[in-house]
Image 1 (tube, rainbow over the protein chains, first blue to last red):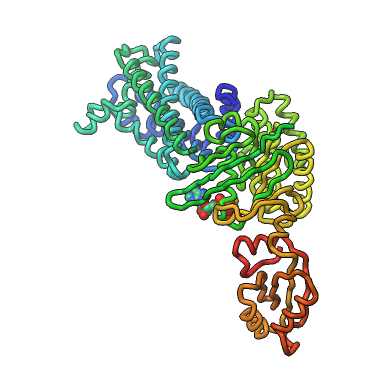
Image 2: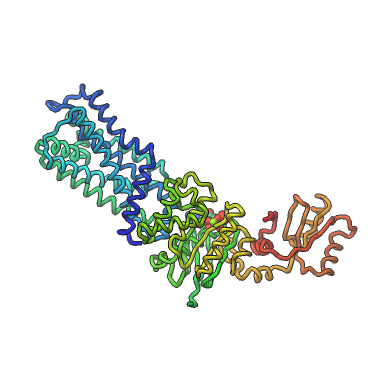
Length: 251
Length: 316
Ligand SMILES: Nc1ncnc2c1ncn2[C@@H]1O[C@H](COP(=O)(O)OP(=O)(O)OP(=O)(O)O)[C@@H](O)[C@H]1O
Ligand SMILES: [Mg+2]
C-alpha cells in the first residue's frame, strides 16, 4: 500500500478516533475557552497591558496555549497505536509510518482549528476587536496552522518515544505550561531577568507576537518570519526524529 | 501450479537480548493446504510467525515465503500474505464495519467495494448483528472472528493464523475449521499455530512440533504418531499408594501421569503378551491395577514425548 493512498484513510481514522475519545475532545475544545474567560475576567483586571484591552492582549496567548495543548494530544494517540496490536496489522499490510503519522497530524490539526474557531468566537463575543483586516487575519491563521502542524509533528515524535500512553500524557501536561513563560498573558518586561531571557527566546513568543500584530493590525516586524522559522525547524527535526524512531520501534 | 514451497527457511534464528528464542529452524512448508505449528507456551511459535510474516527481523539464517526473502523483499511479500496475530489487531473505538472497511481501503479497495466486502465478511463470520457496535463492546470470541475477517478483506496467497481458535466456543471453532478448509479449497495456504492437538490432527496436512525454539519433529499427523509408538496403555491404580509404587517402578516409561485419577500411561504396541508382562511386572499380586485401557496414539502423546514434557499431562 503506498503511503499516498493510505494517508487519507488513516487521517479519517485518526479523526474518527479522536471524535470518540469524548473526554479528551471535550477538554480540547472547551478548556481553551474556559482559560480565556478565566484570564480575562479573573486576572485581566489586575494585569497592566497599557491601552490594549486585556482580551485583545490575551487572545493570541490563549490561541497558542490551546493549540499547543491540542497538538500535544497527538502524542498519546500515536503511543496508543504503537503499543496496541493495530500497528502489527498496519505493518503487515505494508502501511508505512509516514502515512500513519501524517494521518494523526492532520486529524490533530483539524481538531485544533475547531478549537481556534471556538476561542475566537468567544473572544469576539466578549469584546475582542482587531483591525488587522482579512489579510491580517488570514496571515495570523497561517502562522497558527504552521505552529499547530509543527507541534503536532513534535508530539507524534514524542508519541513514538513514549513507552506507554500515560507517559505520553505527561508531555501534554508539560506543553500546557510552555506558553506561560512568554508574552502570552503578561508582558515579558514584568518577569525576573532569568525568566525573561527564556520568555523572549522561546518559540511561543514570536508566534504570539506575530498573531497579536496580525490580528490587531499593529506592525508585525520580523515576528512572523521568526515564528515560521521556528515552526519549520521544529517540524523538520520532528519528522526526522519521528521516522528514525518509527524504524527503530518496528524492526 | 508452481512447485515453489510456500515457506522455506534455513538455519533461521532470532534472539531477544541474550535469550535465543528461535535456533536453527530449517523448515519447508509446501504450497497449498494447512500447516500447523504446535508447541508449548513460550516455545517460539509467535516469534516464528512474526518472522515469517515480516514483522520481526531474523538475526540468523534465511527465510523465503512465497519465493520472497522476508527481509529484503518484504514489501512484495506483504502484498501477498495476511496475518491474524495472537492478540487482536483492531481499533476498539471503531465499529466492526468501520474496521473492516478501513482494512479494505488500506488494501486498495475503493470506498464502495470496501464497504461491500466488509458486509460480506461480517455476514460470513456471524457478526452482522454487531456490525454497528464499537469493538470495545465485543466479546472475546467476537473480536477473534472480526480479527480473522480483517485478514481476509482481500484474499491472500498465504494466511498466517496465530492460535485462531483460542478462546472460541465449540461452535465458533467448527465454523473456523470450515472456513480454513474453504480457504484451502480456494488455493490459499494456511499456516497456523495451535495449542489444540486435536485441531492440528483434524485440519493440518503437515505438522511441525516446536520446542524451545527448535523443530522437534515435522511430518503428517500419522508420521508423527508412528514416530512415537503405536499406542498407549493407561493403567488405573487402586489408590494413591499403589499409584506411587507403580510410578516408581515405571520411572521414565510413564508418558502420562494423572495423579488425580491415579492413572499412568505407558507406550505399548498393543500386543497381548506385552501387556500381560507389564501387568505382571507392576502388579504381581493382582491388587494394584484396578483397570486398564489401550488407546491409539494421539498427538498428545507425540507432543509430550517429543517435547520432553510428559509429566502432569492434562486432558485435552
Ligand atoms: N519482544 C520480545 N522481547 C523479549 N523476549 C521475547 C519477545 N518476544 C518473545 N519473547 C520471548 O520469546 C519466547 C517465545 O515467545 P513466543 O511468544 O514466540 O512463544 P509462543 O510459542 O508463541 O508462546 P504462547 O504459546 O504462550 O503464545 C518467550 O520466552 C518470550 O518471553
Ligand atoms: Mg504465541
